[in-house]
Amino acid sequence: MINNEKQNNKVYVKGEIVTEARFSHEVYGEGFYEMDVMVKRLSGEADVLPVTISERLIEAKQLKIGSIISAIGQFRSYNKQIDGKSKLMLTVFVRELLPEDYGKNPNSVVLCGYICKPPIYRTTPFNREIADILIAVNRAYNKSDYIPCIAWGRNARFAKNLSVGDKIAISGRIQSREYQKKISETESKLLTAYEVSVSKLAAFDNATNFDLDKEFELDVVAVESIDNRVLG
Image 1: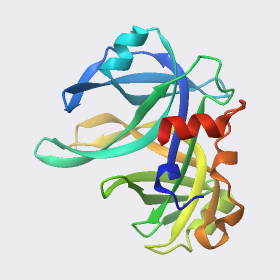
Image 2: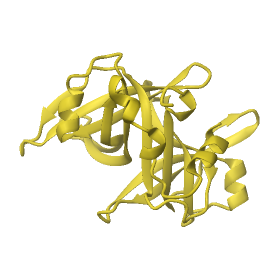
Image 3: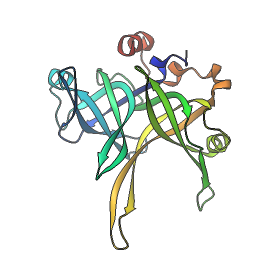
Image 4: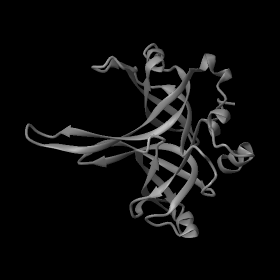
């Protein structure tokens, strides 16, 4: 059921750890660390994604730079104060580490949430249609994750007619994208943005045929039982 908040946000990534673990936060005495993981695309290019893992899992699997991880979890957001300003940060929060050969698709995400800003529709100089979408995905304890998404082509045309408050379901992959932010007339800074590149999108009214488990293609047996164990 896509209205079950435990199923609203599911991510699977498989890739290589490329940075040392950085302390993130502590919950009930357990430390959590963030590291960057390089996830290959079918094109041969790669996305470098921030991944948050508990110290328990890091120690159990002896994770370090060069280790390959295969992980299931959620795409989460949080606010962080940087230079006196609050910035929305994104990370893949790992719930469980799996065997390296668990899934064939190394980057898969499914989300069900609400439009929380009017979509921004535009076309490129080559007339490619794009829509930027920000959705709020409910989490336990009355929390929400705010996830930026980008849709292309017919998905972009569909998204431009969505309104704030509309409930949608999407599937796709998490991508990293570098961009230059202008600091002054003579200075700019290279930054990285993270977003969901949408491959399929459905409004909630038409989402009865949008099976989140089916969209979450891990190509293994007993996906449902593993999801219930990890996300339940």
